Image 1 (cartoon, rainbow, N blue to C red):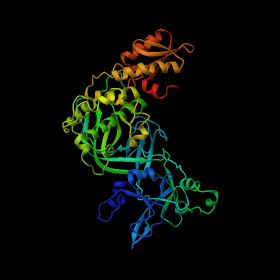
Image 2: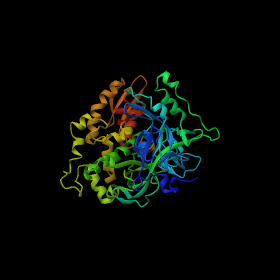
Image 3: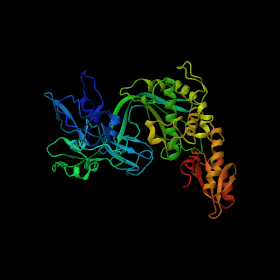
Image 4: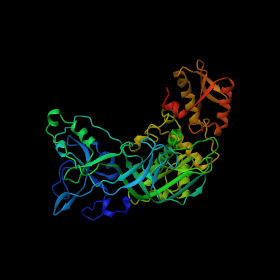
Length: 508
């Protein structure tokens, strides 16, 4: 197996007028006649193009609807633009886990996720053949006729950035370990776990996804559809299944939590813990952008699962990583990757101090608006005032500023109280518990110190717990053990329900 990195430098880049490599990719909606092309193109950076120009994705330009159907590479030849051979290029095989967010370079061909043991499947762990397309194309005869009529299709977006090899010198500080340097960052569009099946056109170096062509054709009126000639495929060349990728080497900092107290679960394969890691990461990223006076889009974020050998059976925990969005880095991530600076950033998140690299920022300017009204009352999970922005749209349902603050406190102090007595949790539970139990026709009741509800008909008790409290009886927090014992002592079967779940899925 060959890797993308082993190919010549021009494999992943174009060389424009001044000779500097660029990762801009074109969507060709007309055949280019000259090089460089001036008309009939839409351009995007590669990490955006693998979503916006993926087969089946649609773009709008000059009231025309352009549906990408495949990949192609045009190269200059005597001033003209001609199709270059093998636009799918060389591939790189990686393991991708949707459950714990792992990326596994050079994976074993069989088996489960090496971090969370998820079985192979589109919703769990799978192997993906990655390719970095040099260009994308529509079916030009459809693009000439397809009018934009007010709606267009969204296709699966690329997964969040994932980190491959690069960092291996983690330094402990407080209750976190941190490292910074250059690392390999992957962004992958695997068509929601199904990959894209490319077929080569007959007598052309154009690889098409037939399903995308059919989707583009349906956007035309029936009379126009009959005028479009279907593509002819090369019967001697077998189809190829690939995921689209944008792979770069850039500056990265990564930080994880050293000591996970008894009773907590930070396993990123669990929805609540996954939400906590991403919320922590996006909260830190926003604070970093504020303190450095840069746009959030200049910093990418992801999580990386790691084995936790401090506990039995080594369940995974994780690290957050922040990378510079510019290839080869702009220096922001390595600056923040200094242990003392990262501690300063966490204290800024918690309103304890201002970062030393800022001059006029009040210490509580970031923290206070989160934990005081109107935000603390209006926002039960996340909003655009705290964590949400366009770039993390896929994670809006799980982001939670309260979990982000808990993780920041834990990163500084292994003895931090991660419980529902913290003011921002206490106020939330007091507001949501009565309508939550009432909506389920449960009789509200307190079990030891925790809020609960009783289904007398089924003899079942529901108990609200902190999202990071472990539901494994072998690792119960004292509060959970006492509440469960209280409910069972009254003859009830017990169901533990996290506040995270109650807010998002109140009727499940």
